[in-house]
Image (cartoon, rainbow, N blue to C red):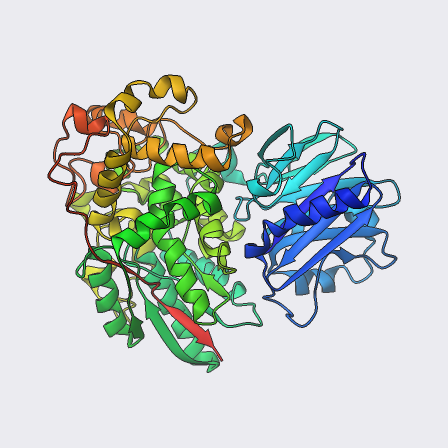
Length: 575
């Protein structure tokens, strides 16, 4: 992943302004520590912080067309670039610039400036895998940045640049370029074919192996689809004979025998991978919270809970010399994998919920996966969010995605079944059909309990009583949420920043609409999967009203777990 920052149509073309743009661009250097570039044309500035994954010896940015009249700064990877070069050997950049975005297969954010007339276009990938923000200055300038911190201090207003959209200076507005069949949320009827689904996923994984640097696979027991991804890659590697070893890591927090860690160890033994476990104290995790919020740029409780172990894990992976990992974000949203989907009343509501979850990924899991890894100059690629794979998966009649325990159809059954090979098993049956854990739960239940206890020591009952007056927008409902909000607003005090974070009621990561699927959930709102009472095998016991308000029983305080284990299962080093 790289970092981009652009200031377009600024009234100031002085050296002082150039120095300011350089200063702001340095705030993104963690995303691209390998090289920096800045291009200025009058009052327009395009800067770039590069993480060199493809062609590390060259390929520095910004980039130029044949006559250097068009300049572009890009964050991301285009997996079909070789195909496009063959299809468009004599392309005219000026003529195709506004029509080519849908041809791109990959994850990307870019700013393209035509210096002939100072017009520009900005675009973001279909799902929002790469982060992007847009802001406006008092002088009429338009600002674009990979992260909030690149523009929040210099813009009068800023907001999230919507995924699947393009902004044109000539039209002066946004238009959606990504219009897949599922986007209208009409109920599909294609029969389930496990081989079609498996083949689509194989293609999505293979195209993401494009790299010129050491890379790996990020896996964990929190969602064992990641392990299937590793197995698929291993099968490919065995044929290609290009890889000499597979290193195995597994995120786990606080417990030597946390659910993820035990599953990861068993899978590592089954695969014959070299298993590694990195240990951190829970205090190390708590100490990292401020850094996490600064880098992730959110106060959403679930995202911070899950981002902290991933943030720590990414640092360890980068220390091994790995610069790119393949990760599994998106599978729960596409296949209805969260535990609350057990209560989906019918296939129509399940499908609409999955559509809404995919549309919101850029605010949650994509934001976490990208920024938690990019904080250490590590790139995460996500095959489940491949455009073609999503089209195949979202065309399946959602009746097949309904969770039916009586028939053995647990969460994400259609995906598990696609890799359930009796003759050549990918995984042992009990692992293949293990209950899903959310990242923040699967790393060890004591991690969340410890965070709640820590927050209770720093947020008083009186502070909670006045929360709606202090934070009228997205008022924190728990002491943990209040604690995160205080930290966030210290880094990003602008109103635009607080408006950039989503809110609303949620149960086990649901949308507000899905909370209505079970009357009991409205009294037990918590993003943890254990809040899905009657579904999770280790569900929370009924909470008292005071606990729901953020008051943690005294017996928890002072008994914070002492060890947190963080790893990343399945990092394969390319030699």
